[in-house]
Image 1 (cartoon, rainbow, N blue to C red):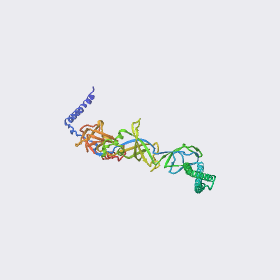
Image 2: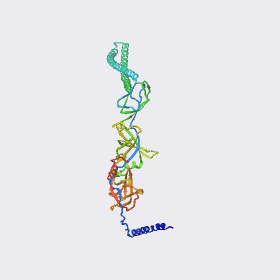
Image 3: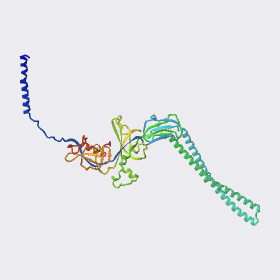
Length: 456
């Protein structure tokens, strides 16, 4: 190795020594990092104070709209249709009193004329009978007077015969004349006695003819068929110039003054509507009148029209006679009056047949109870509370019933308890909380409980 190369290698040694010295100095002069104590971090949660209010029991049902009243126009007379309403087609809306069709009344008009002629003929016979009665009475009076004179003559001849002034044949001749006179009186009296029965027979025929006349008049009225109420035509089976027979169903129409919805309601939800203990003076078994009083008559009918929910006010009328065999639900009939009012094309349709609607029914307010949101009820009926020192506390509760987003708590909570309504993951007993009152959720909860907003 040359001297120059050895010199270059020796120059490295001072640099290495300097680096070791600097490293040693830094290690000796280092300071330990400052230490801080671990602090507990509070978790932000939303809470509400548990309210105690009177819950309005409600139940939701679903069903189809059906006509509240259906009218079938049945032909009561036979004949050819000579006039028909230009709008008599399926789906047409017609007003009360509109003439739907007319059946040719000519035949019934002739029958009316015949009945009137028959009555006039019978009345003439009755007048003639009355005149005959007067004539017979006058003749009877004459014959009776003649008979009286003949009897006087017979008595005179009997005295003469006793004196021998006249012969026996003259006496017998006078007796024969009296017999003839008596027979004439008897015949007239018999004829007079028959007159009342003849009068009654004619009067009966007149009454029958008058009935026929009235019946014919009714038949003429039946040839014109009018709408009995505002309606919508659901079926039409008649055309102009068509011959219709008695009993033929000409058309069907639905009353548009009201409709019915048979809402199928879960049995448990329907049962909650009837709470006798919540009404003063009503307990235990109730009769039919009280049964209706336990359920408020007002109900709400809703139809989802695209993105819009259209609502009508209805009224409870009756309960179906049986449970639905497939769904085991209770059928409740709700009536909506004037379903065609307040129509707005494209926004608010009328309630028509076969619309599938939601029906909300409500009962009378129950006794006061504690309520919490359904979202605050954790698995195994547990709720999370924020204690007075703002720490998480688990508590098991006894649920009375659940209605929509409202849970009625029977036991385990007290009014004013701070229930946590937000999700906490993980939820650790005793963890520090930063509670914030959710006034919006509390107001929505109370509004749903008292029935101010639709049941969800």
